[in-house]
Length: 148
Image (cartoon, rainbow, N blue to C red; front, side, top):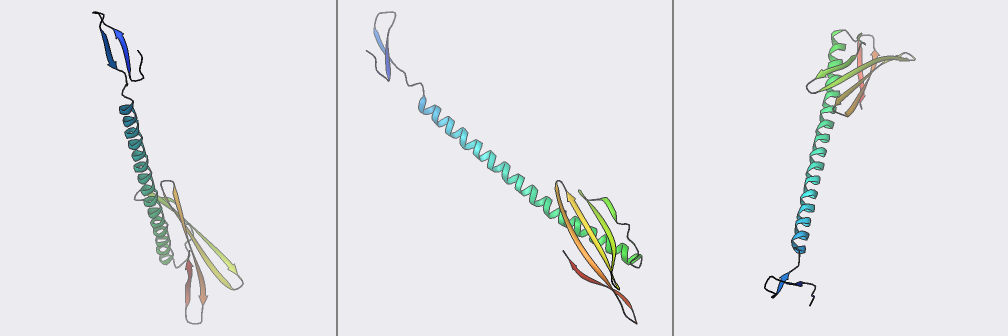
């Protein structure tokens, strides 16, 4: 006789023996499910690590671009606002920053534009500041028109 769960065979004594033939299907399904859960957990952990690293790189790139602006302001103050050489790929901590300085005249007004770029890993952030020269009878003053 044949049953889905059991099969029959003749032994050495010509006795009929029934042996269970389930093959551990339930166990295989359980192992597969646990493996899928472990794989999903590993993927989620990997994505969270990647996201945290990118957020950290973004934050550091912003700080590097701001540091580049600060260094440019220091150089400008030291040179009575005549400095316009900029910086190219200056290393700072784990990243780099670059600064470009351009002068522009619009009518009687002189503008100084400072563009600072911070790079951390594959993340790049840029800060821009524009200064306007105001000349009065008593003094000459650079006015910050804002940082973007």
